[in-house]
Length: 326
Ligand code: ADP
Ligand code: MG
Picture (spheres, rainbow, N blue to C red):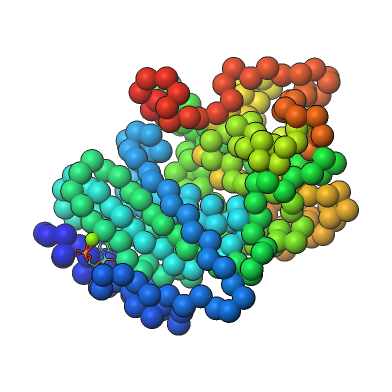
C-alpha cells in the first residue's frame, strides 16, 4: 500500500460518510482546497497535534485516536463560539498499516459526520505517529468569545463535569482497575459545539478546559486582568468520579489540575444566568456556576468550610520537567 492508495481510500470514505458542502469549491485532490466564506462571517482557524504517550495512552484504540484528534480541535471551535465547517488532516505514521488507518478513519469520520464537517485536504508522511488537524469554522463578524473579556462580578460557569479524564489517566498510569465510563471520557471527549455557539451574546470570556481547570481559568484571568474565587463544593462531579474518588481533596486535585475533559469554562454577567440555563438546556448540556470573577488578581480555591486549597500541581505543561508523558 502506498500513501496514494491511502489518500484515495480516505477521499472515497469521506465522500461516502460526510456531506458535500456547497461552500467547498475544491476539496481533496489539488494543491490546495478552496472554500467560500459568506459575507458578514469571519473564519476561526485552529490547529492541534496529538502524540502517542503524550495526548493519549499508547494502548488507545485507533478509532478512539481518530475521534479524539478531531474532538480536541472541535472543542477549540466551541470555545470561540464558532461553527466548525472544514478540516484538514496532517498524518505522520510509521508505516501504512491498513487496519490501523481504516479504524482511525472510522473514528475520525464518525465525529466529522455528526458535525456536518467536510475533510478538505491534508498531508501524509512517514514518521513517528503524530496527528495534526486544522479546523476552520465560521463566526458572525465580531462575535467571537475571547479569553480577554471577563469582568469583575461575572459568574464563572462550567459545562458538564470535570475530572473524569484525569481520573481515567491516573487509573491507567497506576495500573489500577479501569472504569470504562471514566476511560470513555478520556478517549472520546464530547466537544461542546452547540453550547459554544449558543453562548454568543451571553458569555464575556470563554475557553475549553484541556490542561486543567486551574491553569486554563488562569489564562482567562491573565488575559482579562482580573482574578477569581472558585467554590470547590460547586465543582460538578460525575457519579463515576465520586464513586472512585470519594475523598474530597484527591478529587479536587484531579478536577483542578487534570486536563482532557474539554468542557467549556466561561464567565458571564449574573443578569444572563437564566438565559444561559435555558440555552444550555436546549443544547442538552448541563451547566453549573462554580465561582465568580474578582477585581483582585489571582485564583483562590475555597473549600466548603471557607478554607483556601493549595494545589500540588496546577495543570499540564509540555516543557515542565524532563519527559512529561501523560
Ligand atoms: P502535494 O504534493 O501537492 O502536497 P499530496 O500528495 O500531499 O500533494 O496530496 C494530494 C492531495 O491529497 C491533496 O489535495 C491533499 O490535500 C490530500 N491529502 C494528502 N494527505 C491527506 C490526508 N491525510 N487527509 C486528507 N487529505 C490528504
Ligand atoms: Mg502534501
